[in-house]
Amino acid sequence: MTKPSQTYEPTIVAFLCNWCSYAGADLAGVSRLQYPANVRVIRVPCSGRVDPLYIIKALQQGADGVLVSGCHPGDCHYISGNLVARRKFAMLKNFLEYLGIEPARVQFSWVSASEGQRFASLVEKVVNDVKKLNAAPKFPRQRKAVAVA
Amino acid sequence: MVDTEKKMKAAAKKLLSEGKVDVVVGFCKGSRKNASRPFFAKSAADAELLVWDGFCTANLAAFLPRLFERPARPKDGWKPPRVALTAKGCDGRSIAGLVRENQVPRANLVIIGMPCEGMLAVQKSGSAKKNETARACVECVSPEAADADVRIEGTSRKPAKASYGRVKAFAAKSAAERWKAFTKEISRCIRCNACREACPNCYCKVCFADQRKPSWVSPANELSETVAFHMGRMFHQAGRCVECDACVNACPMGIDLRLFTQKLAADAVELFGFAPGVSGGDVPMLHTFTQDDTERFITDPEEK
Image (cartoon, rainbow over all chains, first blue to last red; front, side, top):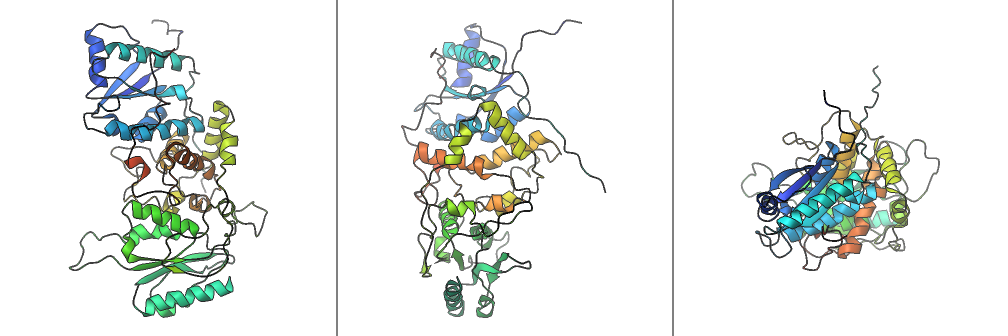
């Protein structure tokens, strides 16, 4: 049996939009750029498709961090999906931070289909940021004692 | 208050007997001492039972989406009912939000604007103070419903200035302390969903918490699921919460939900200048955008 690694390897769930960021990640791959293998990519049609519940659910299920990336403002395939998303995420990020979830755990960015290098350095930055935080699971697991009559 | 009650009864009777509305939503005496409960007066005789006292805390706007709901198989010539509602400032703010979200046909609603001096805090077991004005009323920025069709004369509370002092104090703590405080507060939750039922903004026919495919939050006896439920429920109030404290009053465990939802209200004003019910516009805050919305939170990988 191999000894488990002593270093902490976080799991990052990345929601990437189909038209820009997913293609950007693809470009990073075909360009053979190196980036940490901690991301688990989920392809979504648009960053506007990302429901705040996706992010909350990912964290609750044990993800150490969440990355959401879409087209740059003005480049959305659906004209304004990312602009609506931007408002939503501005509120969400502030709110999660207020509740005590470190801002590094939930990050938002824009990556276009031609920015393979930007995607690689983005993943590197997010993974490094999360590694600096405590490895302990974020959501408390606890069952309430139920009184039986 | 007695004088206000008389005037309100007269106004309700007039609306009902003239056939201008089908129902007046108000309060009647509750079955316990020191409690008034929501009441639907459908005739002039019913209107005699209406009361107005310091216990009319509930946000009556919560009933409106269901009253106006189109039945699954409407009969020929079905029309939404005509409804009058005795509105405090908070009900009025909620109505503005519901009209904005197309849940209430404004033409079918008669707002009876009540003078509100602030309601008494709901007595929870363990709270010693009596005859204390509810916190939401002390912090209320608009005690009189705007846009009232019938105005009942009387004295109202002086509007308070929005300060968000508690939000600032909570935000000053460290992230670990905040998370601990939040999860500790939520750990008392018994998932009765009273907060959701009392809230005028929670009109979804199937709440995300009740959906099983996909299952956003499990109904299991598990704290992390409860925490996720509350994060989801609170975030659905972004740009919509009018700070009426209906959720706080409904909570049987006395959980301080306001401390957290108030952050969303503070942010909506700070980031987008959007105060639901006070200065909202015609479009819900998260349904729109401007080209120069805040970008400060966006991660730039090139930035060192």
